[in-house]
Length: 411
Image (tube, rainbow, N blue to C red):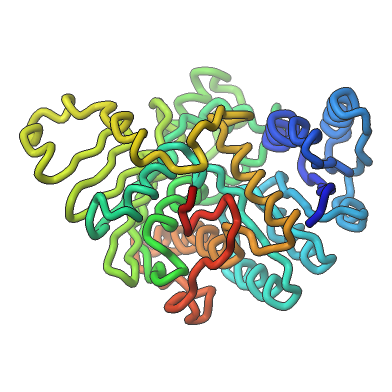
């Protein structure tokens, strides 16, 4: 058991800033030390170093070379850099014996996912995707309800990243943000894990169940062009750009247990934020957009009056609130999910155990990007999803005693 957990943070843009200021600095009093930070842009590291020093009294080492952070006397590496560099940094960190906490994002090549799995298995070093939505209040409550059998046998789940990112992408060069280049050159489900992570935990993926295959289709790309012309003018160079990324991408996944998962990427048209988390079973279900629970035999009288069910999920909190959210006052960003997911990672590092989201989960969730890209490019042809556990999914179970486990629920 480590009294002090020393971290190196690689990537000091918006996400690194949020995690450092919202979670890691507050955790300093609990024995979490930010030993080093890295970014290609020196102004970012200097700004965060000043804030860390002001709040903790200790200034982290700053560099633009991530290898120097990995070489430090740290226990774990947090990767909050651009998507394209996640795997490269994660592999180097595991080879150096450092736990890896990797921010969310898809993959760019299938072999990269296999490299993550092979390296983690060979070195014995965990690699955890920091999927904060797995620790969302409603996601965990629904997980608890599913495990208690309230919805019966689960048949289908939906989820989506419905988030208007037009401003972030259109001003990508000004803000030095990596999403712009991805939307210019790729057409895929580029951000699958916010919705897929919680769904996989509901369905026991890689622990008695697995993802088998997917098919994806994408709409045309119109939203960014109109936004850029309106906001930046017809003479802006992006006004003449041809964006590859479709405005709406739909991906349907078939599971070994017979369940269907439908994912939606929806980030370049005007709309309100939602993750569209939906779980359907033989006895009922949950719908995030209405924050509603429907139970067979209880709510059937509202078959044609769904508005009567809106916001009724709160009525189930007392009985089904996940233990992690009982008496929890949210800290940090994203309604407290950032704090919980980093606490989960740090708990594993402190105890020297496997992380609650392991390398098999990480690889499985990431690979959807490349497979959807291949499916879209071939007119929606089905794509087989690799079994990164090499058959062990049939008997794998989570046997950890971690407080932040996503596979066992205990008070």
